[in-house]
Length: 271
Image 1 (cartoon, rainbow, N blue to C red):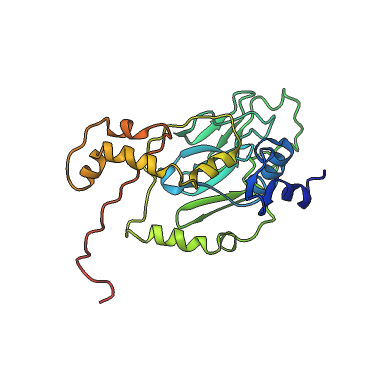
Image 2: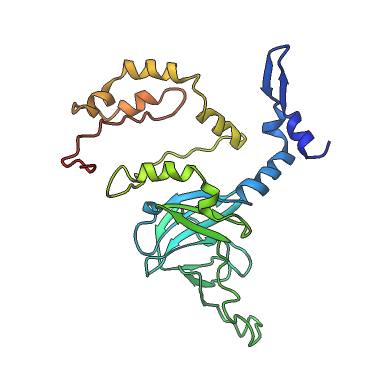
């Protein structure tokens, strides 16, 4: 069976007479489908990368992946953000081997080529003895490769490895209103709080997406929250101990987000 619409439609079993509506397991295990997803979604269109607050200072950098391609985002000495393939332009060795950090230049561990955080090649180790001609490294020919499309919308950073995509705002569509609503809740905007507990599981990316939209486990987690109400008390000005989050994690491993009511504004902006 070719990987066309017939193949994709066959992934969904829909039999109303028998009351069956479910996905086939191959949706999560077929490597051919995974390659298509990488090609057309994660490596062929706009995807969210990070928030500007995660690279706040000059010379900060953050590494991540777009599909199967390692990249890094760097803020240069002028405060500008750029996104590059995380690969030396010589032999493709990975330049940034830490999740985040602060540096003005990057030296390849393979042959010692050095680049600044605007992507420009600064130094080649012993170019004459390496056999390079006089025409070598002209007009930025060996600078770092930038991510094809890289833009910020209200502080949210998006990128595409494919240059032939729609403008970002057009791609975001109505979802841009949600970003606007989130950012406009505070005159200072927003920032991503530091701290994370990453883990790797052997499974398809859609399992995470499905679990995030699954409300079936909410009641169980709500029961756990009622057993350990310290965060809710803290949100109302009470005290909480340092282990409250650990007790709340439970089997699902998710943190609970508790929002405090917004205080009344001193001045009514609508007059």
